[in-house]
Structures are given as structure tokens and as C-alpha cells.
Image 1 (tube, one colour):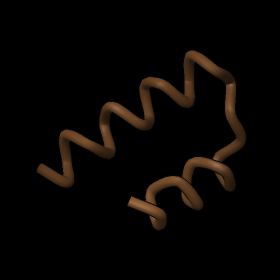
Image 2 (cartoon, rainbow, N blue to C red):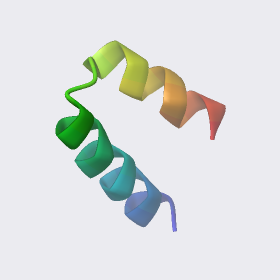
Image 3 (cartoon, rainbow, N blue to C red):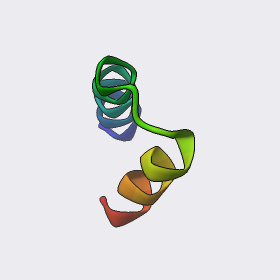
Image 4 (cartoon, helix red, strand yellow):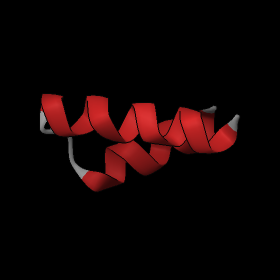
Amino acid sequence: KFNISLSTIFELAKGLDIAPKKLLDFSLDE
């Protein structure tokens, strides 16, 4: 479950061109 969620977030972040820091924050929030 976590792996899938991370993959989805990563893909979304790449598409939105979000910084890795923001991605980490989002992952932590989840």
C-alpha cells in the first residue's frame, strides 16, 4: 500500500514539477 502511494505521489510530483522537499512533506503527512 505504502509503495503504491509513494509511486503515485512521485508520479504526480514529477508531472507537477514539485520540489523533492515538498514531496517528502506530503509523504510525511500521509
